Image (tube, rainbow, N blue to C red):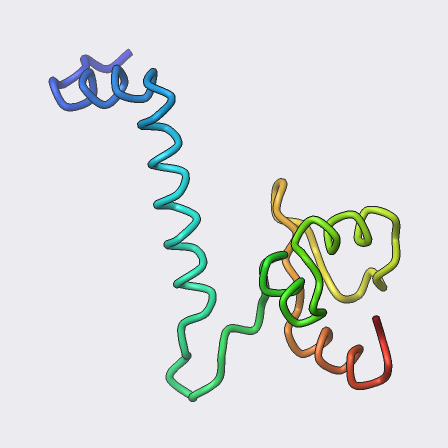
Length: 102
């Protein structure tokens, strides 16, 4: 086991505080949202959507989109899993919507 430096000890103690953990989670979520919606050098948006953005495209709440996904209402080619996250393929989703998908 590596010896702990003072900053590691402080951070480890801070992680025990639920408010600190919640703040960190929100910072990570916001950062992921920003990274996912940044415009690429070619002038196109990210090729992928998180559940929240997918729900916005459909005009439903995030929870409603999650429930529909769990029920199997969306074709499996629209998304893939990375850990616990569901990531939707922007081009596939747009094509599906243009063809009348809902």
